[in-house]
Length: 217
Image (cartoon, rainbow, N blue to C red; front, side):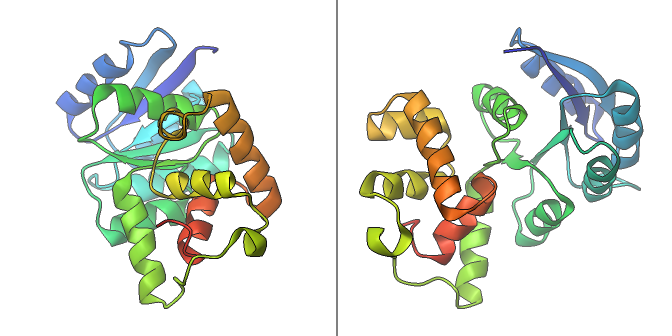
């Protein structure tokens, strides 16, 4: 894998520095800059052209939503991974509506944070359990969640339905492979095939589809 350039945006200096130390444990990741709010993240993004921006959501003056929107508009090739302590519905919806490519919590262990950066860089939408719960709650409140559809109704095989369920529950490819006793490459191929069958763009859309059609249980 090529070197992944990362920009970190967080209003607390010690957290910025700590996260930098965590990420740079991995030789494939290089932190190219630090920012203390969404506006500074956007400005540094234009100058430094990182591959991934790790963005906190709640920061003074210019928050994460500001930064995500600006980056997605002006630097569309850059991935934005939200890393925050907040998993409430309002914050998650704000991040996803702004165009975030992933949403994880700071309580994650170091190895999973590093893996999330690599996954987002590779084009996968990554989200933690909190995001899944919010999507589930929103669908149920809207009365959209229903009884699980069958293989015949979805056009998916039983094994593909197993994969969809785990994607919806926040499992990454490695975890899905371990759970289903498959090779990680096989999981990647199956997810690509599932997205093609369902005419979906990414894992986030697949998770929403799963919740909406009762495939996440």
